[in-house]
Structures are given as structure tokens and as C-alpha cells.
Length: 508
Image (cartoon, rainbow, N blue to C red; front, side, top):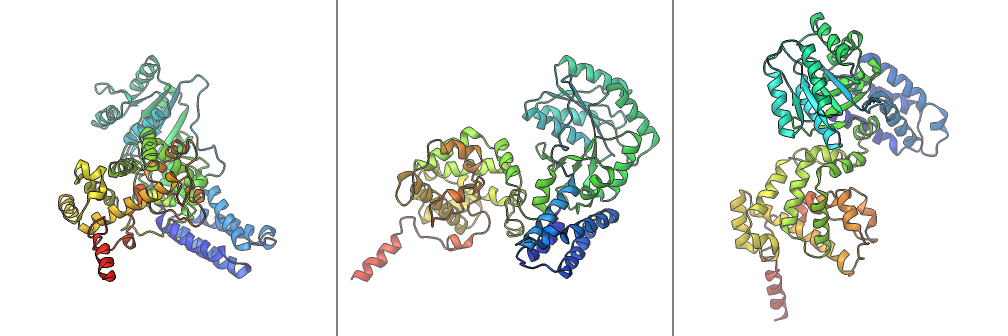
């Protein structure tokens, strides 16, 4: 969503970061570029004007003029200002909770904003956190709405209450609440009806439902694709019913991000969740500071580790790390890492969370089909080839490439990346040229996602001996077009037979 804005702001801050002296002209030029970047991102004009004015004053302040690194100080001001614009203080983005232990969340929004799928996404997220949610559809105007909610809820194992025969939305809401309490659920999520435009009839019905169930939280589901119109919709709902926060949907599209940057400032209500795809797990809690860091290319390692912890099978990751350290690592383990990585979302999102990685890798190299291709190569191998990769000679690689529908060079790259990882882990485990892993390291590393192939996720770079670099290991190895890792032709055999022939010839 913030792709265009992010690249522009990163270029602007990069110019300032290394400056040992910052003049008023530098600040003025930077503010002009930031103003243009925000306006192009479809941010409300009034918000842009106020934001730039406040930031300009801070940049001219004493903190910058007295700093030994004024360029870095200005980058910090930009980051803090952007964080404030997106929501400010940490904690305002959390769901409210009732003292009774039973919480009711009503989702409002226009038709097509994604309320039904968002209701199930939120329920699944709460279920993963150890809660017991139930979803209810009170949409009596769209015939398929209740059925859609039921299908989605059953797919993720969440309780659902619908009554397709009942035409009174208020009665369904009341019955749904009773059912949720009877089932000992602690969260009730109500999916309401929507319209293509806001009208008095809709607002009257929604207000009656709210009065009946007395919700703990009233959230407006906003489509990020409608741009500044999202702010108008938010202000209309806030004036008629009152909101506690927002859920932004369709952030995986080509929306420029103006709605997210404007809605908090103009309504005073926080964005609580964002949806980044169609899948039921494509929802995450919105953290203003983390999002600001991602926009400025500073990464979001905390969210990356949280995503790894919630999606990676810890037991399997621990086994994989232990096999890597005991020289038992094979291509079955690598396949398992690829499979777990796929659960974490798109490569583009993951790389965007790595500090300094944004904009450094092309979209072409971040094609998610690359992982599917790597998995197809491993699947084309026999059980013995996966467990003993050293037998992969030229004829076997040719057969594997044909079976996976790829070039032999693709097979060579995968095998070479595997060999680099295995070699590095062997150094750790046998004490030659490295050091032995501390006790319990495998379990801790797996918890932080390193067993899933996330290079450097938990700061592993800093744990290596001096002079040793981290290769592109595990799941990310060779994914980003690292053609320098092996020639396109690749080795004739993994045993290096050709090299030995050359040596014998030289001795003669």
C-alpha cells in the first residue's frame, strides 16, 4: 500500500542521514519533497499542511542545531512525526475489554468493504490468542451474506450463529448474543448489513442493533482502495453511531495509503487492525511506530518474529535446527522450511520487514512462485536423493529439472545453496573453524523463526565468529536471484571429478 510513498520518503531521509551540517535551505527543500510525496499518496490536504508545518518547526529547533549528527536527528523527527500521524501512543490500538469477561464487537461498513471476511479473520485471530469467539450475521438484506459467513467460519473452526429465515436484524443480534453466552464464548463478533451509500434507514437499523447488544467495541471496516472517500465515510459513521476504531482492508492492492494516514488525524480514532490479503490469516494488529519504520525502510523485526512464532511449527523447527547442527541436515528439512515460510505470507511483505531491505530487492526477485519452484525441484527428487544430496550427479539433475519443469541451472542453484548452509552449520557443530552452539540454542533459534530459514531474524549475524559471514541460508537461500552463487551451467558432479582430472593432467 505505501510502496510509492515509502520509496519517496526513503530517498528523502537518505539524503539527510549522512549530513554533518543541515542548513535552513536543506530543511525547506526536504519539507517541499515530503509535502509532494504525501499529496501524491492521496493524503488529505489539511492533514499534509499541518503535518509539514509541525515537522518544519521541530527540524529548526535546538535539538537539531546542537546535535553532533543533525542529519540523523532530522530522520528521527520525521519518524516520530509519521508515528504520531498514524496513531501515536502505543496501546490505543488494542481491543477494549469488558469487566464481565463477555465482549461484543460490532463491525460496520459499506457494502463491499469486506466486513464478512474480516469478521472471520478477526475471530480466527482471537481464537489463535486463546479466546473463544462466535460470529453472527445480522445482514437480512443480502441473501448470501449469512451463508458466506457460515462457510468461512466452519473452514477455520469458529462458532457461528445465523438465522436465514428471520428478517428482523435486531432479533437475530439478540438471539446470537444469547447463543454465545450459552456456549461460554468470551467474544461475539456481529457482521452487520452494508449499503453502497450511507442512508438514514441503514443508520437507524445499526443504531438499534447497537442499543440492543450494548457493544464493547464498535469498529468501522474501511476499504483502503476508495482513498479520501474513506475519511468521509468514517466521519459520517462517527457522527451517526460513534466509532471506537477502524479496520483497514485491501491493503494488498494498489491503494496509495492516503486514507490510513488521514483517517486517524481527522477522526481522532485509532486504526486497530489491517487486512493484507484474501486469506483468513491475512490480518494483523496495527502498530503506528512499526508501520512508520516500515514506510521509512527501517524494517519491522518485531512483527517479523511475531509472524514467525505464530505460523512456524516450533517442534518441527527445533528438529530442523538440531539436524542442521548435527550434520544430519538434508533436502527434506529444506522443503519443510519452504513450506513453513509459505505460511508466513508473501516474500514482498517479509522482506519489507527486514531493516534496510526495502527497495534493495526487485519485485521480480520477490515472486512467491520462486518458493513453489524450489519445492517442486525437491519434490521431483527420490527419497534417497533428498536424504543423500551428494549422489546428485549430472544425469540425476537433468531428470529432476525435467520433472519440475525448470532448467538444470535452477537445480544447481538450489543444491549449492543447500551445501553452503550445511557447510556453515557443520562449522558450528564440529568446532573446526568456528565454535560449538550453546546449550539450548536450537530451541531458542527455532522459536524466533531461524529454523524456518529466516536469515538474521534474531540477530544471528552478530553471533558469528569474527570474519565469518552469514550465507543465504535456509528458506531464503537463493530466492532473490543470487546468480553469483553458482554458474548457470553448474558443476558436472558434486564430487568435483573434473577438477581432479585437471590436477592429474598438470602433474604429468
